[in-house]
Length: 140
Image 1 (tube, helix red, strand yellow):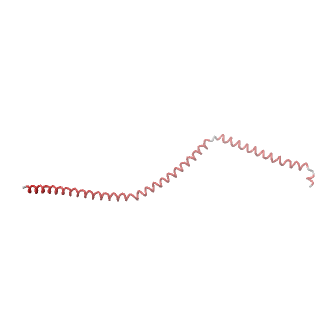
Image 2: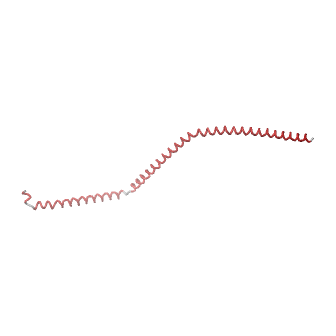
Image 3: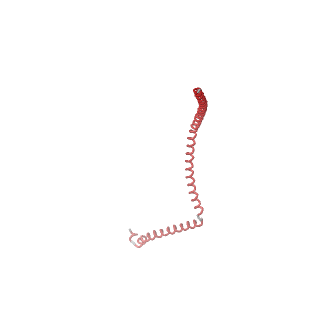
C-alpha cells in the first residue's frame, strides 16, 4: 500500500512537472515570438536611421553654409552701421560753421600768398636797386 502511495505521489509530481513544463514551453514560445518581433522592429528602425544619414549630412552642410552667410551678413551690417554713423556725423555738421571755416581758410591762404609775394619782392628789390645805382652796369 505504501508503495502505491509513493507511486501515486510521484505520478502527481510528474503530472505537475509536465504541466509546468508545458506552461514554461508556452511562455518560452511567446518570449521567442516577442523577441523575433523586437528584432524585426530593430532592423526596420536601424534601416530608417541609416536612410536619414545622407539627409542629415546634407542638412549639416546647409547649416554650415547658412552660418557662413550669417557671419558675412553680420560683417556687412557692422560696416553699414559704421557708414551710417559717419553719415549721421556729416549730417550734423553745421553748414554755416563749415562755410565760415572755409572762408577763414581762404583768407588765411590769401594772406600767406600776399606775404610770400611781399617777401619775394623785397628779395628782388635790393638786386634791382643795386643795378640802378651802378652806372657802369649799363655800359657793359
